[in-house]
Length: 190
Image 1 (cartoon, helix red, strand yellow):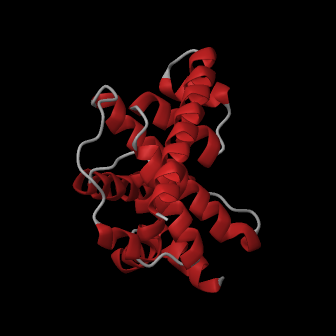
Image 2 (cartoon, helix red, strand yellow; image 1 turned 135 degrees about the horizontal axis):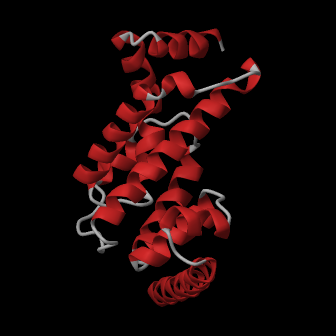
């Protein structure tokens, strides 16, 4: 706990040593969040780096009254910055589908926040969600995985609440179809 407090205070003092420590400790966590939105490795890495720059520029706004919750709040703040930075890029690209894949070695990056079993499930989920059209994928990620309400999604994406709800419904239907196809292929190969 003291280590995290020191790192945050060092980042507030604009000390590059502490900024590097924070970046190294949370880079894999942040990159996995960005991958849910951006599937091109080079772009995802760039977005992650841009997100950390925003984080360091706004670190003075970060508040934590309870030191026991410091790491949870810090990770939540990083998560929100990474999601917003990813959505900003997707808006610039007008929600064009992502081209390219995720390099296999990315899944082996050390992330202390998940177990090996969770990583396998997460990888399967990300690869299925990647097949969704961009508008469905963004709403699915924001609502199901990141916990945003439809009202928050509508405000962030500047779409009607009904569109957010229908995109989620269609995303779930497509994911169910993909899972059924995957089950059929698995059953045929046994």
